[in-house]
Length: 300
Length: 182
Image 1 (cartoon, each protein chain N blue to C red):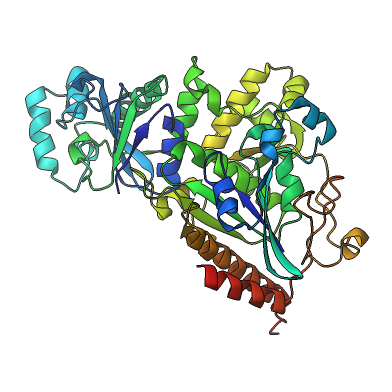
Image 2: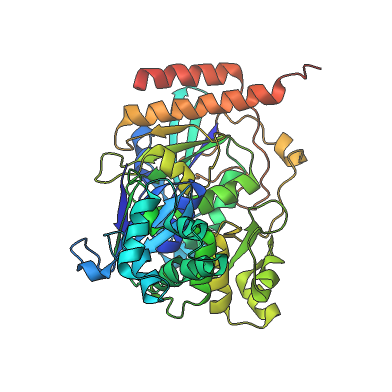
């Protein structure tokens, strides 16, 4: 299934999170304009392998990596193209050139940084655009260095340097919400000091406003950091709840009686809801469930 | 029995409840815009209520959570009373997946009630398939709630999804009451 949409609705950060968590392989095409009629020089191609970014280019002729190598003066255009043909469909061009002793490990790293990190991070500045993910595309070995980066690592880097957040304004968490960790143990990504400080609050007990006050940072900065930690799959923002998780053995629950008839349509308040002293609901009887299922069967 | 219908704005929650309720659905969310009502019923506004009375002394109650984040506090009130809940997600609006995920994270922290994912608007252009929506909701393994396509405008489709949710409830109760095999 092809996945398409507008960046203003489903941001690049969210796309990357989806592609990484879904271990997707294929080609993400990003158009700088909201429609796919965008001029060719404003189209970007990012290849994914099992959720990791393996290559990126702003041209579709598979000469992106060759042109970077050539631009750096490490190989002539013709020679690089010849090697690209030799590397075939199984070995990434970067690795092939390394195996031939033409490039060393540091040069490959530099190539990957230029080709992927710098280029993809720049895409986070797009205010809108159109995207399309095609999972049927074969990975182009002549565009690949052999290195890869988790999509969320690129997101983290891209959002750290993002200055204009207007496109993501509507996605920023509510200042009155709180944060919880969604990973076991410590984060697997390298966090900076402020991100670590915020990570320490992932117990769901403080609002973002309170965190901002305690850290003496602007609330906007806290919201942006929470957003980026959220889209890289480390935390989630959730509404702040003042009451603790109710005790299911509460005496009040026992006194609630049957669930069969609860609120009337005049007063549709769940029992105990008004004073927020909620308790685990009573277990339903087999006869109730059987009657209900029989009734619904007739309606379906 | 109380079921909660939750999900982002325009996922079809109110329509879902209207389709199966035999009383006029109490839509307190609209009243919430009235300042006087807010003052008088501060914690009781902002959810939908429907009822299905299937015998003289037995009824199913359906509560719809508010989609707007300004009423997030209602989630907690409603979920603690729920025997089970269904999360409705519009399959063609990926921009809402994040909010749906937020709801799920919250509900799972506050309740162990069984959940069903109901995909709505699957007949609209460019809907996401169930597998990808589950990923977007944060379900990254085979361990995920059942997913069902539901058309909130069709009472029979809603009835089927409510049956699936009750089935989930029955299974969860069975697993709780099953004695240890040791």
